[in-house]
Amino acid sequence: MCALGATIMLDGWNVNRSYRGMSAEQRLADRRERLMTAAYTLYAKPGFAATTIERLCSEARISNRAFYECFGGREELLRALHERCVEESLAVVAKALEEAPASIEGRARAGIRAYIEFATADWRRARIMHVEVRRSGDVLAVSRQRAVDAFARLVQDASADFPQAAPVNPRLLALGVVGALQELLIEWLLSEEQPEIDELVAAAVHIFNRSLGDT
Image (cartoon, rainbow, N blue to C red):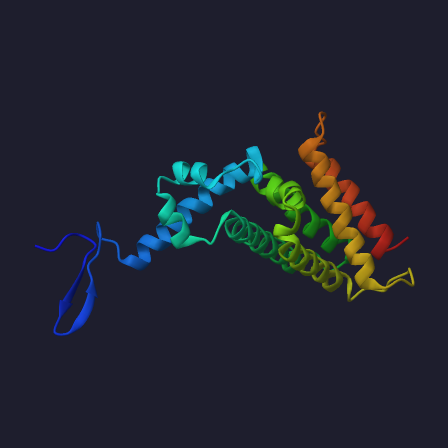
């Protein structure tokens, strides 16, 4: 009798037997997802620097060897997690912009509120995207830049149909708005007196209007 998960020969072909009803590809996907789930909490707190592979594996209930079948190291796992958070956030904001009123004020408020509410709905997401992304140093440098570029393009696209009062490079203005929004969320995460979500939205919309809209 062949053991579960074993490879047998059938008419000259290798056949991977399933383990507990899962194929090898499904087992790998399951382990990756369990590691992503573990990292989602541990990389948020105590943070990337303080989280070892051993702790990740213990939380995900897999072996160290299985870890390296899924990711090349802690850094690769962090990049995958950060990119997932960014992709989900971009999708939420893009949908909000599509459904927003056809005015620069309406688009700004809808997009900004959608992002802030989505980011703050789970403190782990907010910490990974706005705190650990900086504390991790060079690990997320490229991933972070891609994220900033993507959000800046959303800002530019949202304001492209409206006249711009300030004779300033629109990309640089968009980057400034994205940077301001990041700082507001860091304040929400780290401040002893946490500002209300409506306060964050109001401040971000004001910055957007002053820089890209009516002055």
